[in-house]
Image 1: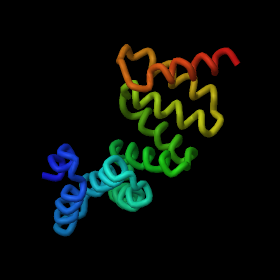
Image 2: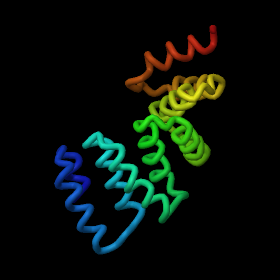
Image 3: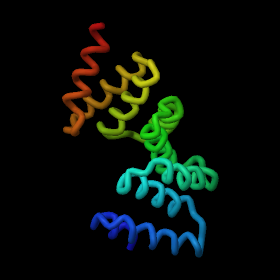
Image 4: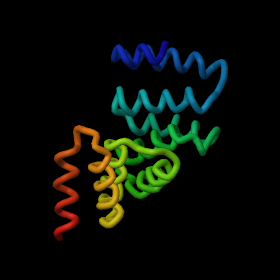
Length: 146
């Protein structure tokens, strides 16, 4: 039901549902869903971080939890932690263009231009159309010809 509420853009109801589930059983999945809701729907990375860290304590190897944590740190401006977590996720799963673009942006924020160029290239080479494509192309050109 919480997923439906999120899809209907009713994050407060989603949070109520997730909190009720959490009262019955703590799980990395529910905690991660809470973190994602706070981060993506309510633009509240500080609140999201609380739940993402709890989810990570339960299952630090869960790629979804790592990804949410990486996104949270990115929004909080902690690009080193974000980059490190994005790198961990990238090792475990095949990403899509938007994911590779996020990894590249995080690497760029900490001055790792070589790694950023690699991930911009990966983002552009998937053949997928993605919202950040034009920006990724410009960033890659800048990195290659600086």
